[in-house]
Image (tube, helix red, strand yellow):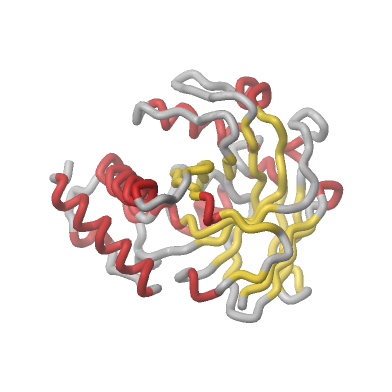
Length: 261
């Protein structure tokens, strides 16, 4: 593994890139042999600094759980990142475009937990039992590492490219609808750009949450009651620009919208 001073230096570099809204060269190209465990160590260092600065951890995001996302990035296994309270935005809001780098949108479902979930043997049934409700959400991607040639190690280090999430629509109990068949139409400036069905996330979006609980157990962590879990995108990421209005129609689960200013 990388030594602690190098972990801290990478976290410094990513923090600077976030402040200046710039991107840095591939970490893996400049740190030969850097592993997934190194990447999560960088992410933990970054998250610990956020908590020390007064940010509040409210959940986790899961990334790269669908074939469309894996094809879009060239990365073939899931990852995760943390969600802080200042990353959660209500539907209908104006979002500052300059908050983010390489700004893209993904269509997801968010699980709000009623009970704690702890791996390593968490199943889809455990997830459904522990979920208070499921709600539509958009993820705003925020990438501080150059996109061409990225590996999962680069992405994990960058908090899995988590920028913010926009929450809206109609919350539902996990047994009120067949979550596999929740679908969405994603529009930019009134033109449909992407569409998808939630079963694209590992066959069932709750499987993403189960994967996360089991993965966190390897790092001595668990999902806590009240946390908000973004289960993974079931569309390709859609690029947005300043002035764009984004609208996702989840049919019976309502809509989520935002505008980038």
